[in-house]
Length: 237
Image (tube, rainbow, N blue to C red; front, side):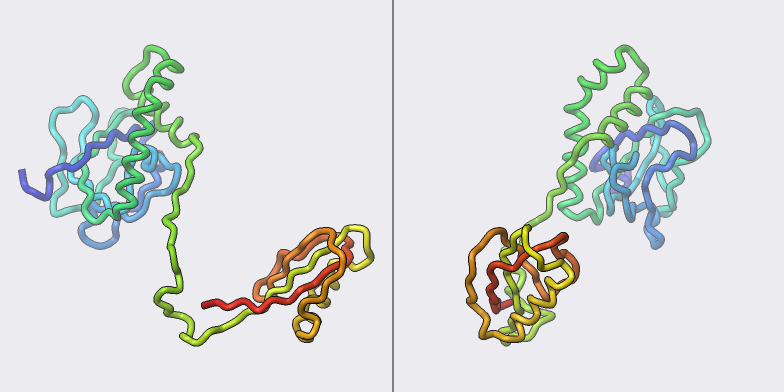
């Protein structure tokens, strides 16, 4: 078997009907049998397919031999036949990012954990019905997105000068029983920033609201009363 057609992972993909959306977008440049994108919570996603994965063989569950691509041609998983059916996909990780590979493994590991639950729900059933229900259950599961944390995003500045820059942040403590309306909230805050002699002004406190003048939106609603104000100059470096 050619090295390019050796599998690193086998994936089962159930299809209910011929032209069911699988949520898979194939590459538009060679090799065309590489997955470009996989839609979240799609049929392809629930099977464990990921961007960068290369499809090097396909067969229908129960068949003996895999059909392999010629010249890395674009796959057509909607090929005619009997439906519903389960395809067995022979894949290589190819250009997959490590994080994508881990995601695929998490999905497939969760599928293994859910098998007993699906079997108990369906009772005796065909392999096709079981795989369809397993994929549906995976798509309905609650998943927590994992985002890698960056310890210091400004370690190597690209978009800012090396010189220290500052932004002005106004913190206001407000009460709900006064007469200052939300529309005048930003005006009062800007006045405090313009006159830095007001920095450190202290009055009695009730509730705190923060207004960052470098962004838009997020203003408090309803009638408010300014009871305390403080201006801070924060270094961005």
